[in-house]
Image (cartoon, rainbow, N blue to C red):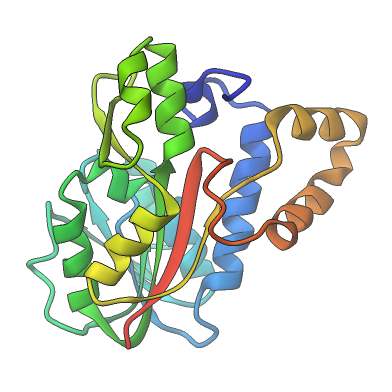
Length: 246
């Protein structure tokens, strides 16, 4: 199980060395994933501005959907205004077919969206042929940690089914195995490129290395992105997947 509370690792608690490391990993992963040529990117990551701003700085035009199950940060909407357009919507019905080149669903968007199958079908619909989606979800590791903290022991054996977990803030999160995440993407008609845990380095390892030398963050991020195998869902609080529309 996780050495510190699951809600802290998920970013709901105070920021620490591990969460700083996690965000650096996510940012570099997105840098490597974004299209090389200027493209139209749809951001479904909750309207917080971080991912849309990064894509805009890379030269892409971004459509950021606000209130996709969460409120937006008003300050984030002021950044990169020339390249980021904001739309408030609960679904993608306002978009025509095959109108975007890439879709970002960071910030656990498909775990918060309990009708994830329908949402992913909409993602596939708006993607142009050859377009790609980057999806982050809560893992079974995180789900089991939360259930253990809540002493819901009887549910810990039901990992072969859809796992819906009460979140500490009163919400519900859907947790996935790597196989279930593949099924979600393939069920929408997308070709899965890879599925992997976002991080495999433990918080204690990250804390120890950064405490010894704060300049080692870049090395830790590179080690994380180059070391771990695909489809390993036995570690990490989140899974990340990349899929392509044929």
